[in-house]
Image (cartoon, rainbow, N blue to C red; front, side, top):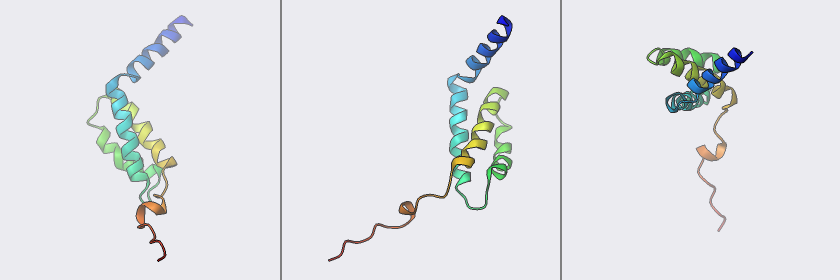
Length: 91
């Protein structure tokens, strides 16, 4: 039991390093940027971002991939207010 907890704590220590957190944030940004494109779902986002992760070391790859998978699921089209200019006030 103690060995399992030590292994779990070692995994958290490896995952919560600044470099791995940076790659997780990068995965979220890229996943969101791809997820807002019409017609591209989470599976397509993973397929597009998978070649990018081959250059990373294994811990960074394992923190970037889930982030880029979950981000397109929650990303939607940008709000209408971002794409249209504000209406003019009546004179």
